[in-house]
Image (cartoon, rainbow, N blue to C red; front, side, top):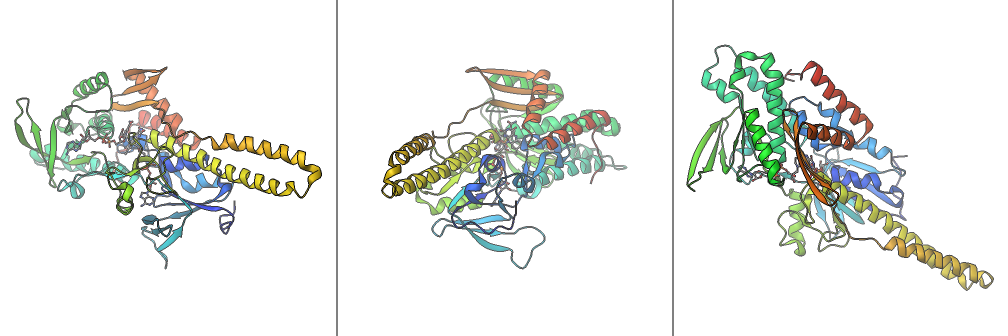
Length: 476
Ligand code: FAD
Ligand code: NAD
């Protein structure tokens, strides 16, 4: 399609913020012929986040889980505009979005406005730090490709520095101590991947420091993976014990410096103990926080004043207090967990809703046109009346759209040493399983969920490559 087409004045402008799980699911199913569609996101690709932890150690190369938004949009029937920019403000009174090009190369214009008739916000969330001092300056997050690349580089930097000639033994221990904060699925999967990397590659390539490498996972609650069933929590904790990953539960990190983490551990008798853990690499995975653009919009809509974790939406995903703004994924509060599964079902629901809205309008127009010809062509009145009836029947069917309903398919997480845990919804019941078979299931499930055949082939190739030749330990 011609990407330079002028917006069609007869169509509404639908602006979509974000190129993540929610918005890409919407774009996939949206009939773009019905609207002037404009996509705005600072990231010009879709990221398959479930395999991001594998990129931190090179089990998978990062480009294998990225799909360019330009390729995705090229497959649409009608052209879609894409602007690589960050939306900085939603002005719901004037119905415009302020956007800013935050990339390194800027033209003479790097800030402007985009008007909308309908708006979908799918900007995801940012990393929570709870204001804990030193986290942003010293820790790594694990949300975007850049984060995974930074971690991969830092792991090898720590290892090579620890192996430096005459390195001080205390310093070797610190450098090879990898601390992960947050025992949710992100922290658990990363800890598992890290220990695999060490066991399968680093130990073999740099044996002289191998007994010093240690991974510690810190969690404030009494157990890791709080959203999984008890049986799988126990299985994960015992597998980590076997893998020699230390889990410190009931331990809350309070402060981070450039070389140590300070935490408060609750002891069985209820007393608290302050502990200091020197580290070489710190990965911070304590969940989501609301993005500034979302926070700003929330403060400007009175119906959102009691919402804390994102934009409160109704059962059709309309942002409460607005008529033409919808929200999907991690930035929306619809009563579900902030997962890719929820986001993509919400996006697909909105595509159906918008396709139906367009069909409804088209049918209503046709009925109006036919009704006006009834008096002009009395000879054809019976035919026209029959046609109107037919359109009205279609209209009733199209208009009857049920509210959004989330269907949970289950939860899966990789826990290292070729084992995974799965809580799967199965014929009205739940099946909890953990182990090597679950790992094979995890691999095939994620492979089938990859965005494209190209991604699937690249991921398969990466798995084979790291199995046959070992992971690439060069520090880029
Ligand atoms: P995202 O996918 O985060 O997309 C947000 C988009 O908005 C991005 O394109 C971003 O660039 C863009 N954006 C940001 N700010 C702006 C702005 N100001 N203006 C315009 N655009 C903006 N969930 C699962 O269900 N299963 C898993 O196995 C799983 N594994 C995960 C592993 C990791 C390491 C992580 C971090 C998350 C994982 N999740 C998983 C959670 C899942 O990734 C999120 O729930 C999901 O990405 C949410 O989708 P979203 O569309 O709301 O946001
Ligand atoms: P999370 O919110 O699930 O877990 C964060 C954990 O950090 C919590 O258990 C919390 O108690 C702990 N924490 C918070 N502050 C702390 C502190 N100061 N010290 C120690 N611990 C602290 O975050 P996540 O793991 O990043 O997951 C985010 C979302 O993405 C979730 O909805 C999750 O289900 C989803 N996700 C799913 C998968 C999967 O299905 N495999 C993988 C990754 C993420």
